[in-house]
Image (cartoon, rainbow, N blue to C red; front, side, top):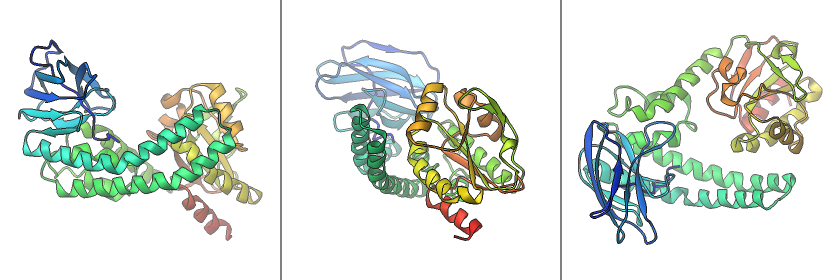
Length: 369
C-alpha cells in the first residue's frame, strides 16, 4: 500500500537542486517538511520499480523545485523513497506539507491526495501488524510460534485488506472520467474477481491506458491465460528436487489421482501464510490419493530446503532455483504467487488458485467428505 505516499520533492528557495533533464510537461512544487529532513525526492512511480528523477536540498524546513516529466505521469513526492504523496504531472503548480502528507494543486491532484490519506488511515493498522510480525521474526521465535502468530494476525490483515480493496473499488468507480483510479488499481487487482478486473481496465475509461497500469494489464493477461488453461491438459516440465535430481511433472500428474500444482517461494509471505491450508488438505486427503507438487520460485537452495523443513511440507518439491525466470513460471505464465492449479486424474486442469477454504471445499466435493 502506498500509505499515502510520503513525499518527494523539489529544491528550496536557496537550495541546490539536482534534476534530470526530461522532456515533457513542467512541474512546479513548493512545500514544507518535518524537522531533520535534509532532502526530498520526486519519484516516477509509473512502473514496477519507483525511480527517483529529481531531488532537492531542504533549508529551514522548506523546499521548492521545478522540472519536467511526461505529461500526466504518476509521480510521487517523498523523503524516504518508499512512501510518497502521489500526484499526476498535469502542469498545475503544487503545494505540499510532507509532515501532514497533504498536497494541493489541480482539482484532480487535490482529490487524489484526499483519497490517499483516507486509504492510508485504513491501512495504518496493517503496518503495525506487519511490524509486529517482523519483530517476532527477528527475535528468533520458533517456526511453530511464528506460525501461531501468523494465524492470529492473518484474519485481521484480511479484514484490513478487504476494507482497503472495497474503498479503493469505490474510488475507482467514482472517477471513471479522470486519472485518479490509476493510483488505486494496484490496491484491488489481486483481490477482485476476474470479470471485475476486466471491467476496471476497460479501455473506454479515461485512465485505462495510463502507463502506470501496465502491471495490472499484464496481470489481467495472465488471468486470461489461466482461464484458457482450465479444461486443458497440464503442460509438462522438468525441474530438480531438493537433492538436485531432475523430475518431470508428468511423473505425478495424469497418473489417476488429483494433484495440486502449487507455485510458491520461501521468501513469499502470502505463500507461507497459505501453507497451513495446503498442508491440512494434503494430510486429510493423501490417503485417498491426493498429492501436491510444489514448484518453487526460490533462488537459494538452503532457503528453499529450510522452509520445507520448518513448515513440514511432506510432498514433492521441485525448482530450478531461477526465481521469476524459472521454467515453471515461464511455462505457466505465473507473475504472482501464491498460485495453483488442480489437476484431475486424467491430467486435465480443473481449477486455479484455490485458496484457504476453497481448496478444502473443492476436495470435499471430489472425495465426498
